[in-house]
Length: 288
Ligand code: ATP
Figure 1 (cartoon, helix red, strand yellow):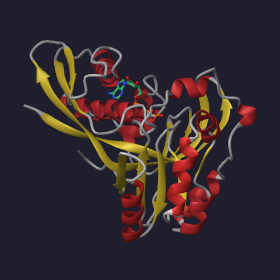
Figure 2 (cartoon, rainbow, N blue to C red; figure 1 turned 135 degrees about the horizontal axis):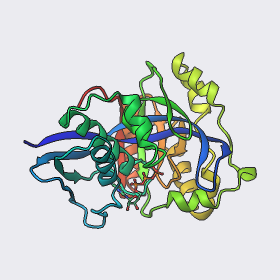
Figure 3 (cartoon, protein in one colour; figure 1 turned 120 degrees about the horizontal axis):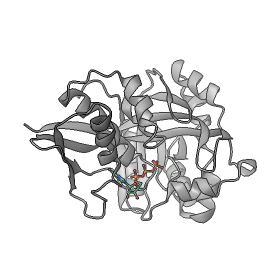
């Protein structure tokens, strides 16, 4: 019987880099939230031992290059599961956008198969296992507001009572995270967030302090290659956002505000500049 699991988009309120481990591996410090924009992961057990991936977007890989496939394979191998699974990815999160779509799909597979195959593994264990897939997957296993550090594997959930609305704008081009990270010069990072202050702002429900710390050190690099990012952020601020930022390595940008009517106004105004605009709220994963 088919079961459906949610894979929420993630968004970076801040990104800082504390050091480099290898060319592509960094020590991160970032504050990440999940949003109510989802891929839906349909899982159906199979009689044979195959992992079969299908999706409604034909440009996505369906073989071992798909992170969802890799996630299923890891669990199947490690626990010597004889059963296979059919995975249908109903894609709504824009791809290569900085919204962690592939990572969230992989995390939903881990949570889903943990249930389906009755493995009883903890979220923390799944997160540790998932770091091999991509640095965003451990966060996505938790998919709730958190401070993420280490290589992406240390996820500390955070609480806030602030009411937040996000106007999320995905420009009409993609950015390769790998490409941005490979060329990154740590001596020339962008404007760095004070992550401690940001965490304090969330905990103490201090909205002005929060808006002052929405910063992403990858923005300079992506922004130099794609000036549209700076332009869209400026528009978000002009239309009334209290802060504007870039998620992941881009190109998605977002405006933050704490009133629905203001967010709706920004959302309507931004639709004149970009096709893919979303008005979103934070999402906290509990149980699927
Ligand atoms: P970031 O890590 O900066 O947030 P991203 O997560 O937005 O980047 P994805 O949407 O995950 O980027 O896609 C990145 C690449 O991963 C794509 O080029 C795609 O071909 C590949 N990929 C593998 N599996 C998936 C999947 N299930 N969904 C989307 N992309 C996938």
